[in-house]
Structures are given as structure tokens and as C-alpha cells.
Image 1 (tube, chains in turn yellow, purple):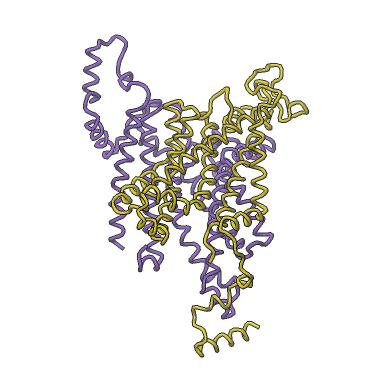
Image 2 (spheres, helix red, strand yellow; image 1 turned 30 degrees about the horizontal axis):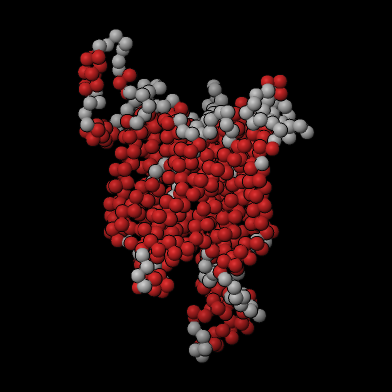
Length: 315
Length: 317
């Protein structure tokens, strides 16, 4: 079969019917290429692909569940910070689903409140990093020249900083609260977004509709806001979901070391930190918060990946 | 080629400057007055002032910076506050355990990730691809500190197969003992990094298999495995050099959290202990060294990449 095929192909090549460049077309294009094209808007088709991706749907479901559970934490009959010395280290049971910690506090309730911290850190740090990234990326890409050069050197410098070590140092020096932790994580993680946005701005600014807007006298801010930034949204969404995962991981690592969220407030990282002391007699304390961290980060990673598949240009 | 290297080296200079300023500020902004190390309660204010001047603390800040930089260039990183030992000497003791740990994990990572990535790409969307891919998702999502804790709980506490911490059992100095202590930290490090490398290799191989030359080779009757072995592999492994270059710094600066959890006496746990002890000369030295390594690693990756890839060498990037 293969020999027949290649003989036909060589014949075609020699007679000049096709050239070598068509090889890929002959051998690699899948039959779907010839299927009836579906005409619909880009965002609608993106949604359709996303909704069909089973893995992404499961991840979104888990994420939604975690958000709802954390938001409804106040419904729990237990106070997350109230000490109950007679209820210390109870194993998981009907009344305490995840047991109690070393101060007798209901572990499930504390995990839900910890979820609020993780989600807030992830979301707000992402907002900060994406905003800076968009600003630097569009300005750099749109103006080019000296401005671009300066901004990109600043970006290089930020990339060469040992960021996690710096966050730890600042946290130890200044005894940071949750707001400052969010700020610092955001300030140290905008570089990837800026790079992506810059690359996209470079191609977008020479598109006809942007040139048209320029000739009609639209203001600079309007061109960037209305014509350049919308074109970068798909890839920003991908970077944003991965940034959330990064921020959550950083906060929990920080809190795990005892440099992040402080007692009596709980975060999943700080709960794992105190669980370390009870690993031989109450291992469940070290297991539950970890499962929640993994589920949360996993769902953001899967969603980000699925979005990436949708947004990357098809050949 | 040389021009490119020269340009990259010139670009590094401002980075080094900023890095040194940040390291210097870490010392200057440390909580507490450094003078407290030199004064005794019965000193007069004038005496304290004299000590201050003799230490150069009354000089303008930029003079202090240059003096500090000059010391640094002569290899004087200062003295640790906690132990009063020279920081450089302490670091030199800490580096070999870290190189051993990170090096072993890096080699293991490549040994796992490359075959897995190729296997997955060759059978894209098959059950084997899905299974490996699932584990790689877990690998990139699991925080290393939690994975480390799980390993300790199961293998060291429940099953008691392996020791929980340290590098050697006190009093024994055998290679077997060292290996036993390093198994858990190496697993913790390797799981995560091989997941990252695997994903990278898999997606690169998949897009490489769609290239024209692969179709041509197929048409000539070569099998998929042959094509991968003879042509695709070379192109897929090139970008891995970049990844390796970027992780070169960790070979020396270590993995902070994993070393801390397993009490591995390397650079990572040294850094964390310094942070908790507010030992700012050590903090400064580690920031400087790991930043420097990061810059060198990136430069190295860039240059090697251009050296080995004729396409870039010829046409530039």
C-alpha cells in the first residue's frame, strides 16, 4: 500500500503536478480538514470547545465546588478560631468530619476558612500581576524603540531575581499581613504576562483595523484599550489561570514555613505547618489541607491548559 | 556568534548592578541597628558615635555601597551573626550536599521524563498517554512540601523503611546510609521536575511529528520509532537544554522547602535558617549567589542553544 502510494507521489512530483512542499498536505492533513466548515464567532466556538473538553469541565466543577464551600463557611456550626481544650485531636467523625486540631477546633471549618485565604490570594495577586503585565506589555509593544528596550531590561532584571527567596526575606523582615503578601506575589509575577502581551501587541498594531483607527484620529488610549487589549485577552486568560495557581502555591509554601498567614487565622499552608508536629499520632491533620491545595491548583492548571489548546493558532 | 555573546554579556551588567543594590539594601534595611553588635551598656554616647564613624556607618549611603562592593569582590561576604563564622566558608560546606541531591534528582528527571515524553507523544491520546499525562498533572499541582510530608508519613513513620531526616545517621559514615537518607528527598524533587520536563518534551515531540520531514520519512517507509530515534529526538532535546540551563542555579542554591523538610544540610536549609535567625549577612550572600547563578544559567542556556542549533547559528533569532 505504502509503495503504491509513494510511486504515485513520485510520479506526480516528476510530472510537476505537485511540488515537495505539498508533501505535508498529501500525507498529514486529517480528513476533518475537508469537513463542512462551521461558521460562528471566535468566542462562541471557543466556548463550544471548552464545554466539550471533559477534563476542563470536571476541573471547573471542582473549582466551583471549592469556591461555594469556602464562601458558605459561615454556615458551619463551629467557630474556626474558638479553642476547646476538651476536644483536642479528635479523629474524623460524624460531628467533626475532618476531626479537630491540637486546640480542639473543627478542622473542616478551618479548612473552609483557609480556602477563602487561598482563593483571595490567588485571585487578587493574579489581578495585580495581569494588570502590570498588560500595562508593560502593551506600552512596550506599541511604542517600541527606547521605551521597549528599557521596559524589557527591567523585565529581565525581575526575571533574574530569586523571587521565592525574596518573598521569604521580606516576609521575615516586615512580618507581612495578607494584603502585603498579595501585593508582593503580584509584583514579582507579572513578567510572563508582559512578554505574551508584548508579542501580541507587536502583531496587532500593524493590523488594518488598528491602522484604520489611527487614521480616523482615535486617541492613543482608545486604540490600545479598544483595539489592542481585546485581541490579547485569550492568551491573557491562559496566563491568568496559571498565575492564580502560582500565587496559591507561593502563599501556601510561605505559610507552611510559618512566614505567611499567622495564627489564629488559618490558611492551608499554615495548617500543614502545625500538622507537622502531629504526624505520628494524627496524620489526617497533614492530609486534608494538602488534598484541598492539590485540588485547587490542579483545577486551575487543567483549565489553563484547556484554554491554551483553544487559543493557540491551528495550523 | 561572538557578537551575540558579547551583546548578552553587556546586557548582564545592569542586571548585576541591580542585584548587588538589592542585596546591599537587604543588609541595610534589616530590622535593628547594626551598631548593637559593637556596643556595651557602659559606653558613652560619644564612644558609640566614634565606633559608628570608624565602622563607616556615618558615610553617605553610596560610599557604603562601594565599600561593601569592594569587600565583596575580594571574596569577603562578612560574618554570620549566629555563628560568627565567615559566610563564604559556611557556604562552601553547604554546597556539596546540595549539588549531590539536586544533581541526582536532575539526572533521574531526565531518565524518566525523556522516555515518558516520547512514549506519550508517539501514542498521543492512547490510554498510556492519558495515564502518564494524568500523573504529570498531579506532579505539577502537588506542592513539594506536602508531597514531602506524605512521603515522611508513609515511608518513614508508618512503614519505617527510611529515615525521616538528615543526611547521615550520627556515628555512621557509609555510602549506603547516605543513599538511604537521600531517597525520600530525591523522590520528592524528581516527581515534580520530571512532570514539568515530561510535559515539555511531550508537547514538543507532538508538534515535531507534524513537521514535513516526518511525513516525508514516513512516505519513504520508515517506521515511526525509527523516525523518532533518528531525527525527532535530536530536535526535541535541544530546547531541553534551555530548561536545564534555567534549573542550573538550583543545583547550587538548592530547593529551600524540600531541604528544610528533610533537614538536608545544604544551601536551601541554610538560607531558610538564616531568614528565621534574621542573619542578614548570610541572607545577602545567598540572594547574591542565587541571583548570579540564575543570570549565568540563562546566559549559558542561550549560548549553548545557539552553539548546537545550526538554524539559529546561521540566521540568528
